[in-house]
Length: 108
Length: 115
Image (cartoon, rainbow over all chains, first blue to last red; front, side, top):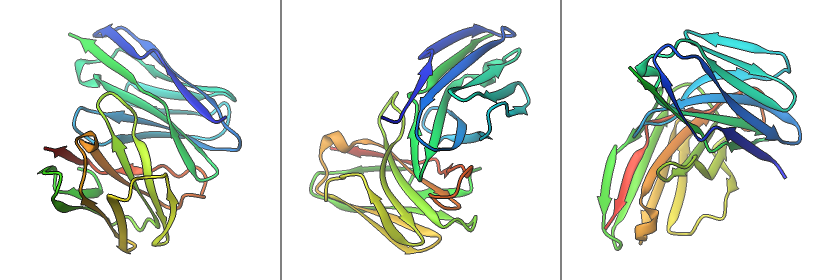
């Protein structure tokens, strides 16, 4: 059964305290893995696309990596404005599977 | 600002009302999607349109009726909704549901409340 699991469910960090979010997946025929950021009351905002194992993408304090079974979203020296829910989604043969998300709170 | 525009942003309706949600994209995408999202949950897929034809209907009750008038527009017609239908309704678009490595781009949603 195709499945996407994110951990942890919630994460509280002090400003400047780096950490990583995990997205594990079991799908047949991976056609892309995507990271999104979602603020309360807003739609998911696209961050990164990953496709090949070993691939890495960076944007400001965020870096996404991909292996054959999981992806990590590394947050370096986070700021309070990085507080949001981070969603991972996997595309497999036309279907899009979302993980349950990680709620990140960065405390000043 | 998102490139997928949804109207209205908020909608309050009674269980006997008929209303429509609207979505527009100008990115040249040929696939459009409706999702329902409850608080603290991920988006749940409702419908997929590919080249203006309905390709996926995730067993959604008939009180939700999608329509795709052209490649840029997507509507969701609502009738006789139940209180449990209160949620954030998200529209998304992408180059095509079968094309690999193509993310979906989301609007900011319509917050729907059923009285």
